[in-house]
Amino acid sequence: MTHDVRRLPLRFAVLLFVVTWSSIAFADRDRTQVGHNLNLGPDEEAGEVTCFGCSIRVRGHVSGDATAFGGSIVVEDQGQVGGDATVFGGDIRIDKQVKIGGDVTVFGGQIRRDPAATVGGDVTNMGGHGWIFLIFLTPLIFLGLFLALTVWLIRRLLRPSVSATA
Image (cartoon, rainbow, N blue to C red; front, side):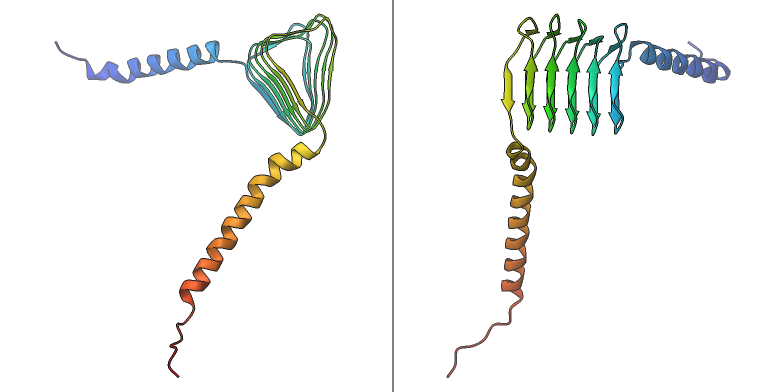
């Protein structure tokens, strides 16, 4: 079996083209925003929706999770979230004829849920801003204690020893 070396770059280029376009065609349409509100219209679909320092409004279909850090989530007009809806430091509003397939979790905010809305998982609300401080400050406190212990140990090891001869 002989291989034509001259056709190898052409075959490689065709293979690269097919792999690139097939990955684009089948790629999940995840949407991430920082500082700008994210609006998903009635005819729009997305995979995972994440927002940092902004809010999410879903009127279409999110096949995965919707997560907002420092913002709110509003699901309205027959909008759907296939996975979980999670908010850190904001509120969530779930209108009627809305479906959320997974859990609804809010840290440091409120849940406003219409009784006609469907939630497939658990609904957890850790309201109040104390939870935000607990979540973000606890690791910083442990880091500070670890650094203080490290400095104390280094100073103790580097301290000159004094003999007790008198």
